[in-house]
Image 1 (cartoon, rainbow, N blue to C red):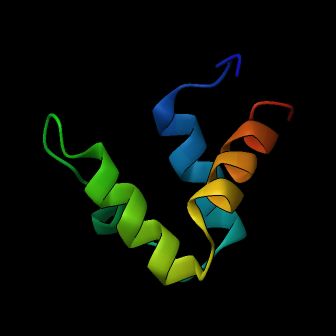
Image 2: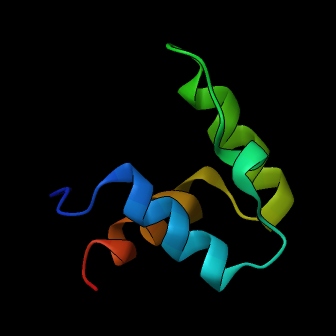
Length: 61
């Protein structure tokens, strides 16, 4: 996947799309990215594959 948007931009876009998300949902420590993705997956009721597609889609805007 080509990353063309910063993580900050992606967070803003996701928060706009899903009003249930907040800044705390995107917080993670170094090496804890998987835990954050798991939290997002549960909150949005999406699989990891669906999340990956969502992040890829954000790159096209």
